[in-house]
Amino acid sequence: MATYKDANYLQQSSSEAFDRDYGPGAAARHAGIYRCMGCHREIGIAADHVLPPQGHHAHTPSQGSIRWRLIVYADHKPK
Ligand SMILES: [Zn+2]
Image 1 (cartoon, rainbow, N blue to C red):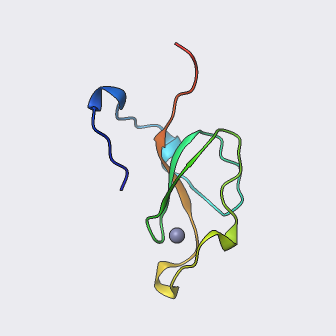
Image 2 (cartoon, protein in one colour):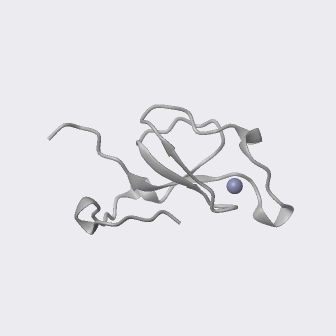
């Protein structure tokens, strides 16, 4: 599970960007932390990079397929 120390750097969002699962190799439209909904592994990825491919890690049959979901969006625009 993603963790943090200082809550001042995170804010809750109801954006639909957090509701969609992406398959292996899909383009990551948002930079941030993605969680595999099958095994709960987390990765960090830059915007417009490609999510890891099917062979990135193995699942048991009960974990199903690799599905990446954005769980933390990293706002990289200068303020
Ligand atoms: Zn997984």
